[in-house]
Image 1 (cartoon, rainbow, N blue to C red):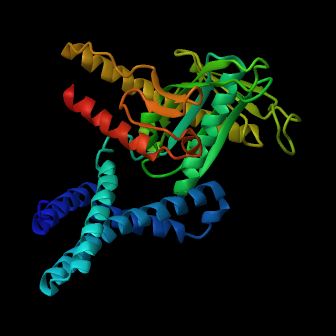
Image 2: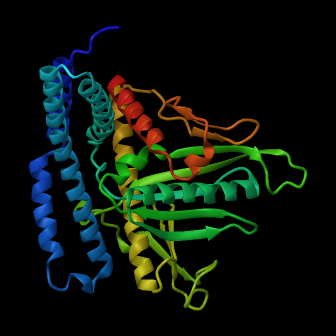
Length: 370
């Protein structure tokens, strides 16, 4: 059995950590914390509860981000001291403790390194996620609702605030579509690899003959628009329809024309909002999501033009990106990365971090090969 070279392992850890610290921009994080702290302490902040929640959430996450990186640096220093103690005392128990801690630090650094791959233009933004049921009838609508729960549980595990913007219920069960925001730093960078067609294979609970059913749902992920993006839409390019909210709800639902459907005439993009109680709030939310989708469309058109000029005709991601199989065996497999697990119940309960990490690494690999 080869002897573990602790000095070499520690040098590798420090090199990886230095790279992470540089990309994380610790000075920039500290400056952002200072700015957000001043905003959080401003008089009248809570006059606008949504704005206040956004500021305090960003402050909490940024503080956590800085502390996470700094704590890792201290942990590596402590590991070096532990190794030195083991060598000086020739203590095998201390040496075994150092070996275990080395493995744990290596695993934690690998997780942190994923963040260094999120350096796209919009990766650090909040995310707007839309799930739509596809082929498969009522099973597809039920699958769309299962995916919604999966992402909500994932966000809950990380303490990310989520706001459901629009829900369209299917007639028998499940959802036709749902749109929600995930408000956290790098929410878009992480969730963007979830975009595509998801497939479910199971014995249908809606089939009285107990037959196996394959159903599909589409997931779309876009970055949330910010005021600095300057996406201006002329009023004559927008058609706005108002209607009464549908589905279960509390006071004022189904009683006033508060829901809004906004159509961008040049592109045909349609956005519906019915979460807020007032038509004005729904109109503002719909405009923000419409601007986000137009931003993504503009970015895609620019990327397509660059590829055409470069003569790059390689296809992008395939539509069907992940399969969830509940029968005749239990498996969830990402068809791009080949990452798979044998516990669909855990995945549907929000355990998708490994899939996200594999997707981010896969995407970087594709970019490097382009």
